[in-house]
Length: 103
Image 1 (cartoon, one colour):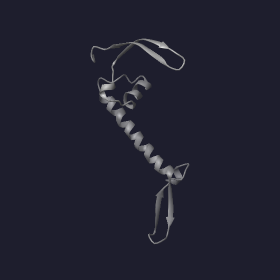
Image 2: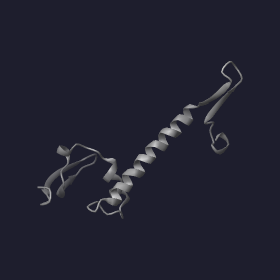
Image 3: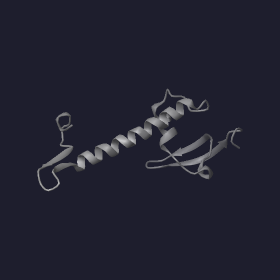
């Protein structure tokens, strides 16, 4: 594994009372954490594919936001923003129209 990586993933210890062994480096541990996160993201993407009411997948931002933002049900409002005031660092929501499906 170390030969396939730019960084050392496993450190080996030879000999000794226990006969040596191998230990993951910090980089190796983080690589495994990243792999686990990517597996979770992949599963959520597959879940979106099976959801007939899901957002269209032609927008990468919409697809990612579909499974990356997780809030409680009471904090979700589905609707259309009908007006907004754009400011330098933030925006003010002026009007919000709830869709009939979720009103």
